[in-house]
Image (cartoon, rainbow, N blue to C red; front, side, top):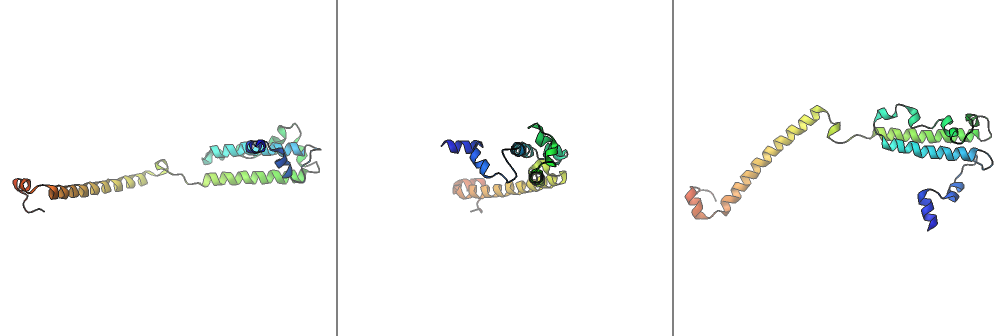
Length: 168
């Protein structure tokens, strides 16, 4: 039961360690940078989910992870992306994460907006005119049906007094 809650909350360390890339090691700062990138990825994905306008994504630093940002939280220099034994794997991983984030942004922006707010004035005008015509026709049809039902249910003597002898 504890395992389920830990996994649900994202605290299951054993699962994370099993899925670590080969370049990540506990003996150097690669694990810290790896964890920092994953933490930043979640933050950036929350930003992407919370914004839908194209103008919200003009500044790339709001949705992409930079090398400086990745090492800022752990207190090392950005040079680990080029001077260490694991730098190639780290650069590749950061590139993949940024590609995922760009893909998420493109998907978010490409979704067609729905609702009346996103229609043009001409579209709204035509829709309103069509709905008005349809409403008028339905009112007319409904009145004719009601009149027919009224006459068919009306007693014969009242129909005669009203002068409606020829109707059914």
